Image (cartoon, rainbow, N blue to C red; front, side, top):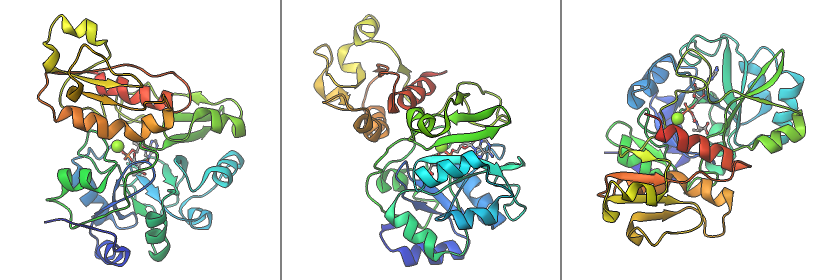
Length: 318
Ligand code: TXA
Ligand code: MG
């Protein structure tokens, strides 16, 4: 059975043996393995039940190490790295051959980030290899923001989850790439577009594309609870379901129309950072209720609201 703890040495030893483990980051928990060991990488895809055409993010703890994995760091990428790493932004950079093709699914770029989490940084600093880590959820399900989420879903397949508490950002990293036309965000995430644009100027957003898995980014239907999630108001759904069979994901206000125990409030004060931090745990809690549908409202399309709305739309996509 899986062990959950804070023993960084133990995590290190398991990773050196080619095992995969749960790892905390500031965004969501990762399913981590030695990025330079193809056997460990294969294990990650297997445990997660992830299609091999969907590439992984490589985690490390310094820009010096990044230089050993990529052939170039464009000027704009360097600016972002200096300003926002460690932090919730992942950059697509031209890869060197030390990174196995499996990691990048055959693409010539590799996704890299330095996570902003003390235990993760400690672990990365004592390893002599980087860690490939997708979010530690079964493919297509909601990402985990606590060690318990990981243990509950993948516990029978991995030996250890390094427990770093609740993820402080709560939503996956922003994925940023560079083309001749300028910077492109392929996934909205924990680093807001506003902050990136303050450093880079105008950025194109291409995160809504893709049911084409070869394209960078991700599949449309994702982050989904098992119960249908509808972007509707409780009033609309009450025509078809009894109040006690409806779950509500509310931003900053509860409704009187639905029993209280069926409602999850993201932030009483309407704070988007707090809402992001609570989002995935709230979706899990609603999914565990005996309800027929979950209804959710979209949040203001600004700051982390953009990334939250992106996750809600994907969760609602059928
Ligand atoms: O916050 C995060 O990014 C978390 C934590 C654990 O770091 N990780 C995460 O990984 O969300 P994952 O595997 O669930 O999502 C990685 C995304 C995928 O949508 C993948 O398609 C994209 O990154 N990606 C990875 N490498 C890529 C590449 N070379 N080009 C385009 N997209 C890439
Ligand atoms: Mg994921």
